[in-house]
Amino acid sequence: MRRASFADMNCSIAQALEVIGPWWTPLIIRDALMGVTRFDHFQSRLGIARNVLTQRLDHLVTHGVLEAVPYQDRPPRYDYRLTDKGRDLWTVLTALRQWGDTWLADEGPPVEAVHRTCEHTARALPVCSACGRPLHGHDLSLRHGPGAPDGGVLPE
Amino acid sequence: MRRASFADMNCSIAQALEVIGPWWTPLIIRDALMGVTRFDHFQSRLGIARNVLTQRLDHLVTHGVLEAVPYQDRPPRYDYRLTDKGRDLWTVLTALRQWGDTWLADEGPPVEAVHRTCEHTARALPVCSACGRPLHGHDLSLRHGPGAPDGGVLPE
Image (cartoon, rainbow over all chains, first blue to last red; front, side):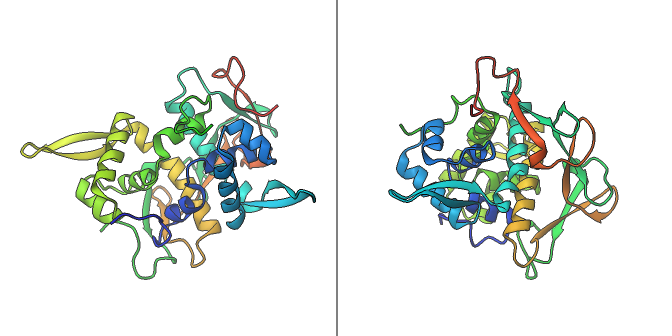
């Protein structure tokens, strides 16, 4: 069996990938987070085929990650702006960037983030929402939550 | 122009997607983080075609995310174990999971994480590595880092 979709998996990672997984999509969101809004600007930065870009933007509008705001009537043209749902993807893109910086960027990070509040170069570090201490992957144990009343994706 | 690869982009997000972007790959890493190591176990959990799974596992071994540890000689069989580089992807998978929980999981999170240290249900919250305060996407300003001596991916 080969799946074309993860939509039937009761797993938030699979559901998230349905929205942002398709090839090109994370880079479109990256550019949107950097302030790109216009079709031609995405197109020239990414070197993506126009029909593929149209499809990906429509997909992100359908899923409420971007909204298409008209800025011209004839012909109709749109700014593609991140919604709150879309802006909240900064956590995913930041985690991807930091992992790439750590493990793949031999010459050092191509892009750094500065925390406006303290004015220092900053990485996002995960802390526990309950106790505030630094979180490490091996400190987390997974269990089924309220969204998996009849069993879910955790292995036996 | 249509790209088949992001490898020539000087961007850690694009480089990370080269490794973990291909369809299925994030779910293979999800399962590996949940303790799955055997080919047949990945295959039955994901319902993925065996040739595709072989290709994806080989790709992750080549990129040092998984290591193949023989557990049987004839025929040769391997456990696929996460390396340090692979385990470090928990940050990316956790960010995806939490975004999916927030925006896509109408019935609540299918999976929850418990922080072993404090024994509470925990979300990973990003704090600034420099000042320790909570980080928000709009507090970050991006600039080119040492890995982009001749200009990089930030828009003008």
